[in-house]
Length: 77
Image (tube, rainbow, N blue to C red):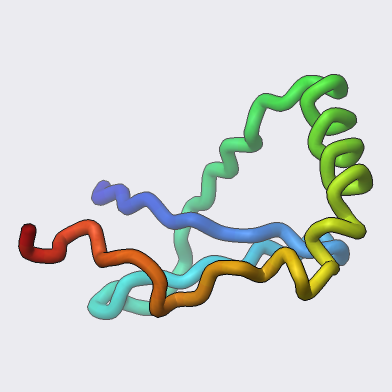
């Protein structure tokens, strides 16, 4: 049996969505889902942070950088 790793998303209707690389034949497969380990404090922290920064992130005056700023990581030095 050959295994490939996919990254997917589970939506609010409990449906799994994932893209399969080209060349994989259609047919039945076995799927194993690994759920991220996150304690309740971690989820509460991220929700609190998003709530705290909501107004700052929505403020257009905070958009001080553009895609034209800086240089690509692989740019010649």
